[in-house]
Each structure stands twice: as structure tokens, then as C-alpha cells.
Length: 136
Image (cartoon, rainbow, N blue to C red; front, side):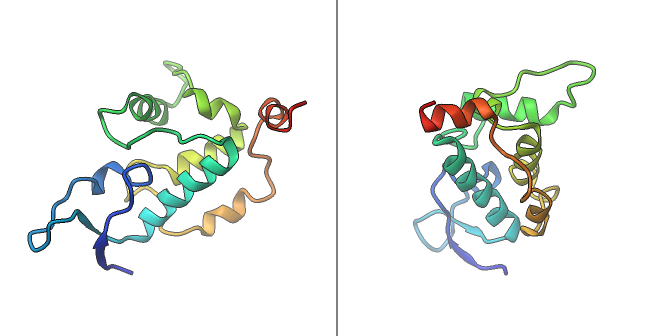
């Protein structure tokens, strides 16, 4: 579905759709793509699992997002890159899922949530983070 409408809050928005001004109205708008829904789903699930936002704004002026981009773009083989702090709460399978759903390039991101079924049976949080959440 492709429609024009108000952009979501910057926290849930990807960098590519932030700040595009409409010529006819005085609010920010964007073209709705299913890959944007996948991104927003990823953010909401991340918050539900960790209790924290991964970053405040998906932009080059947010240090947490910049660290995420650096980690996301690395393959960890030739030059290992530290995982962003909040992503350490996730298992390796959980990290793979979020790397896929929070892919910075919309054309590389899944167009829908069909890939979610690959991750449903997996554990997403590390035991340490689960213990912290239950107070054990």
C-alpha cells in the first residue's frame, strides 16, 4: 500500500523518511511503504523486550543510532565491532532478527513480516536480561 500521510514520531521513523516537507501542507509527510511498517514493528518489539528505545532518533546526530549503524554494517570478521549496549541483552538469534527488521536501507529490509516466522521459536533475550527483568 502506498499512501501519503503524516510521518510517525521520529523515534519510530527511519532516517530516510524524516524531514521530508510537503509542498502543500505545513506538516511533515511521507510515502507509506510496508518496509516502514517492518521497521516500526522492530522498534516496538525491541522496546517490549528490553524496556528501552534503541535510540532517540534514527539520524546521524544520535550517537546510539550511529553506533548501531557501525555495528550493523560490520561483519565482525576482519575488524570486530562492539555491539551497542542494549543489543547485548539479545541472543544472537534475536540480534539477527533485529538486524534484519531494523535494516537501515529500506530496499534491503523485508517488505513484510513473513520472515518473522523464522524467529518465533527462538529465544530472543539472554538469560541475564531475563533474570534482571524478573528480579532474580
